[in-house]
Image 1 (cartoon, rainbow, N blue to C red):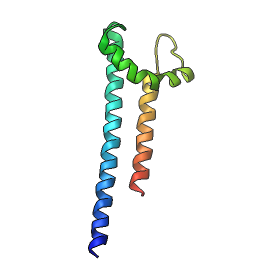
Image 2: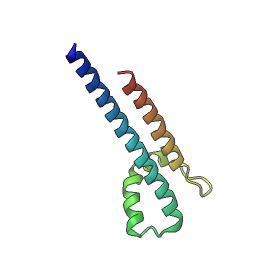
Image 3: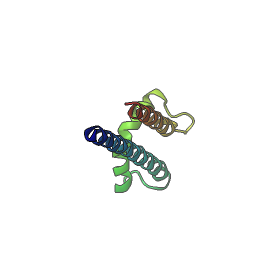
Image 4: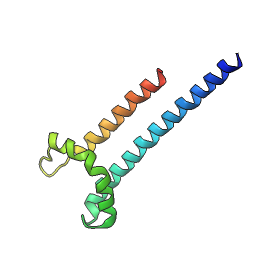
Length: 99
């Protein structure tokens, strides 16, 4: 009886930890993506801060850019990446909660 209660508490702690890590990753990617968008308008591509953000975000954007090339000077890949991150996080959240 005690072990069942302890097992249930450990399961809840593990679930909450996984959900917290998932939310944290989603938020970090979103913040970096917004930072990337803003810096692309206001900062030189050779500035160290912009280069650092680009090194993190570009590997995620490049495959999307191959599928959705920029049209008319507008790059829709950041919006697509945000949508993909959001959907993957929702799917993983559902899987974690149903375990």
